[in-house]
Image 1 (tube, rainbow, N blue to C red):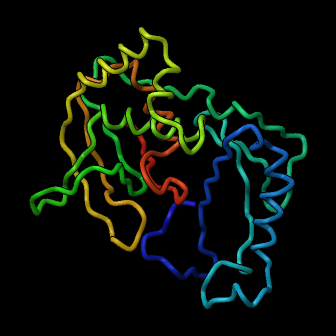
Image 2: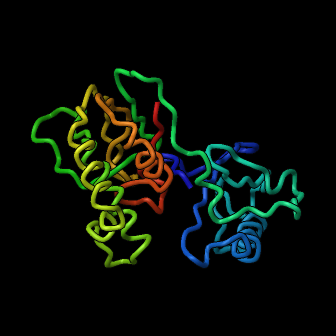
Length: 237
């Protein structure tokens, strides 16, 4: 679920978006229907006093709809309490047609962080709150760190993820990433009590189309620390 900064209470009729990503060999449609969805339904109706707090969600929300991603589109799996049993999402449909199409030539690419991110960069030595803005090379490296954890487990390394690319692709991606120039950045420091450290937008110049699928994958998987809280996702324009 994407974090709502400093928000601890919810009002009647307030819509809430919950984005769930299932990853791994066991994370299939059956797991969602048989384990996760019943758990969500139980949380929506629980009367257990241990979970009772004024103006909190537990025991006080309805599941309005469930959608499954097919590339950039969301298709309904359930709406208004009715589950579509004829719909069978596949494990790979989320990747269909994801590479964004940008006009050629373009002057710049804008990346907007939808949730706070923390790539582990050093704190700025001055008083400006608009730094640090990660470079394209840092974003690509953060993607490989994320992929390593998902593909190879807790002790996976980014070198293992990079090694999945052919030698030619590896050299080209790293060179393209190094060639990108960072443009204007408008980042703000987030509340220390919330996950993530920075949020806002930044621009890149001279972005090769070869990098776009990598950026799109990074936007889906999230980057940096606290990804389990929804931190580190962005959109491209």
